[in-house]
Image 1 (cartoon, rainbow, N blue to C red):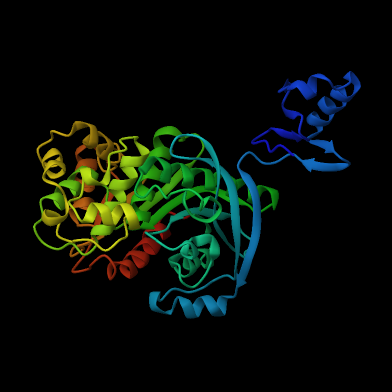
Image 2: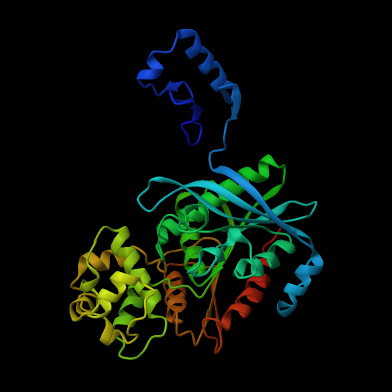
Length: 415
């Protein structure tokens, strides 16, 4: 059977219908008129008959769902003990498979996790973006104890939020594709289309959602949250009503961050994450430069053979080529700088309340990323932006304070 997206309906191997338009191939042209009329009539009823079976008209974004489990209030209370929050509801977890687009705009199928409180109430919607992962089974839709959403997502769901968590491209249903690490546009569209699929799921199950949307995430999730908020406010304000956004530990100033790294002459223990970002932009924007254009030998050969997570020199001055460093630090490599600056998401004017959380001693994603965002947004006249420094917090120790802070911040805006 030929698969069709959106309002397209499968019609065996002969073609697809979209409203009154018929996509005909040579086989379709040979069909008797009576059969064509029959297909047209059935298309308006929302299904078509193929070999005696009915294919129900699919949702525009929701492809399928799978129940992943139930979690009781008692278990959630135990998980939440460190956060000192109260579990108000049992929750249910679903894997959601949905239609979205890849980095090149082509249609793909992706997935994510939906956490729902078992509650007789209208639910505000929370889009929660996860942090950096390198293992497939840590993707949210697996809903296992080795992923952050198993705990943090459950905290919010048990308090009364419908929690939408995209896996991102490259994990779950789209694991056959490379993950576009720290690519603003595709992280945002994956989150947007997951929200659309969640709305379709809840509508089909008669689960009432409020008009309020909250957005949060930490690390890569903080960056993805900022990208999602920016996309929704600038392109989809008539579709989504953002009540508040609270990103944490995100690398929002990509050009500033690149220059910070390349100017260093000391070990940066998280250097492989920076290689991953560089590899993503080189691929997504079609630069297609060889690894040797960025890395000295023998590290270029090592990465070519084993990928961006291979063991390499951690001192940027010894790892990166002089030409690459000079091109970025001196503004001479405009082609590359354009790809990096395309992923800057710190200098714009948000309308909804936005609170940035960041550890002051973060040596993975330096604090200046949040400071630059706050300063730039205030300079543009944003009146509802706050910066919450987490004093002496590094990238990992700050995460618990971030969750507590977000919980408190969102509680001010839930209607």
